[in-house]
Length: 288
Ligand SMILES: [Fe+2]
Ligand SMILES: [Fe+2]
Image 1: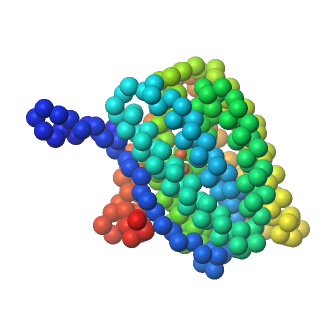
Image 2: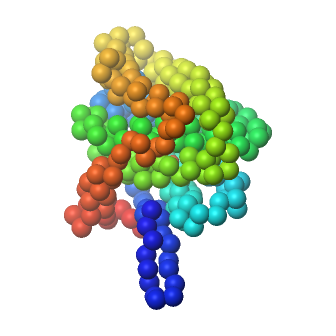
Image 3: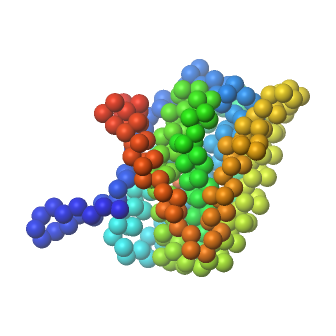
């Protein structure tokens, strides 16, 4: 949060993050078929997550917008605007990423159709449930994003164009990780709804992501390559796996007094803003 004084009689309130209008210009030729460690299962898991993102993040924006007028804190109001801008650009660039994968023969349309079912179901639920679902899913994205930014081993497994793309998304998810949560606390604050919704979301989300990822590997005819399937499974969900080691941070969300900023990412954000968008930033030239 940031409050800037301008003139003697006025102040300008600003969020301390803002949307970056990126253009990754994805082309099918530049995106390897198995862009994650040349591994069909690891790639399928990331691709499945990407398939959910455009419609999922449009849902996040809608669910926060429902309550925008109920927020009076001027800093949170600015953060809502910045959050909406960031998620809109994420949805657009993931759409472009997904279209490039589709042209490479990946079954993105089926994945997107399947994810649209639970998302549209949530749209028919009470608006406070929708906001609680968004806060829960934003916790997932925040802890996955932080893990990616802290894991050079995992980042190095990604082909360069996809690596930069996921790093940008991870940085911005970390920047706005508390926005939906703070709106939820402002307009509801019910612990039982927050925790219950997280448990419900978790019971649907992971079985869906994993079953769809395996379906993708089966369709590719790679499921019987046991060695590479086990390798991908171990990287993602093994004892020291990328996702499995997130369990303690996931469980923090279920504590009554939890807040996303309890996971301190200030130094991480400063490092990654410089790495990607500083004067020598890797992506400074990709901002429109
Ligand atoms: Fe996002
Ligand atoms: Fe987000």
